[in-house]
Amino acid sequence: MAARTAPYVTSDKTSFAYISARDRWPVILTSAIDDTYRSVTQCDDPEKRDDGKRIVEELARLKYELQHDRELTPIRDDGYPDVALYNHELEKLGPLTWFKAPWLYCECYLYRRISTSFSLSTHWKNYDVFARQKIDTFRSSRPAVLELAARYKDLVTQMAADKTKAATNTDDENEQARKLLFTEMCEICLWGNATDLSLLTSLTYEDIQKLQGSEARKASEKNILVNDLGAAYEVLKKAQSEGKQERRVDIVLDNAGFELYVDLILAGYLLSSGLATLVVLHPKSIPWFVSDVLPGDFAALLGALANPKSFHETPSDDEKVQDKKPPPLSEKETSELGFLFQEWARMHAEGQLILRSNRFWTHAGSFWRLPTEEKGLLDDLQSSELVVFKGDLNYRKLTGDVRTPDP
Image 1 (cartoon, rainbow, N blue to C red):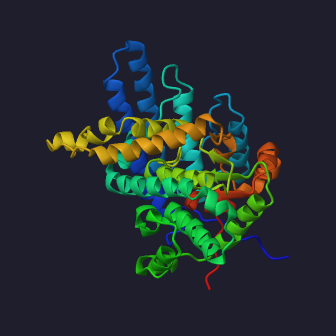
Image 2: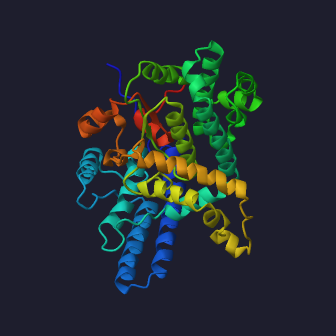
Image 3: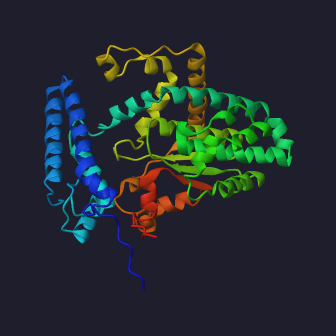
């Protein structure tokens, strides 16, 4: 029997894990400390302020433990069942130190420790220590956000106008156009604003062909190792052709901000095109890997779209320091962002676009443990036509974060 492939470890000088433990994690903790301290100093309630100061002290101790390669200690019980899973695995793997540990377990453990400091507090239980960064990052994506909003409105408007014709048209040329549109929308979700967006102004076959020949698209496609989008389209198209009453797509989310925005672009397209009747978004339950989506990030994004002038015309902290003001939105830009809000808020209100949290997504192990750790979630996902896992952490968990043998 072949030996089990080893995972990445923080002691391997050739790996990302080594750099993470020594360079990335201290910076992340410093940022968390600074953010919490800033919020504490702005707090008028003495009890809440003292509570926040204790959290700052705990995070500072955690940073000290990390930088001095101390032994990982059991996570304090804050009432959630994943604590027992973390501590059982620590006991099984241990003793571990920060610089001599499996990367996947250790980085998940780091964020779980951060979360525990807040969950055991009195006044800061639901505080997202990374929210400020996520909001600032989304605000900095303004040009791409506006570009996509305009293209998306054109696309949805045209699909609505062509719905009757599309329902009766079986022309191979139009079917190829729809399939390529699906591919392009998925690649927008993958690459974000790095994708050629020219397709979204039209569903015509000629425009599809132009896009297909785009140098930008060809260049980005070279970076895709395995591409099964054609098979994914056929799965959704088959369910649509068979008239299945519920055609569900699940997206296991990664980053908030602009990436969540393009995830919603994809979700909105799937629902508007009829390829899906239900899109389930899976956010994290606790602040996770700095930028991962929490339910509150979805609400914040919709809030930004509902009040776009307030969001995009308010100077960021950096702009205030530099005495700069963002340029005002045009009436057209404001209208296009408002269109997105109306579309996505309606889909959410009607139950077509829903969020479903589960603590499993912030466990420390691979997704191979799904049948034993969260059988209910597995059963739920199996009722979906298509499950999309976004981002490198989800990929690492799907593969068990094992070291790939050198060719």
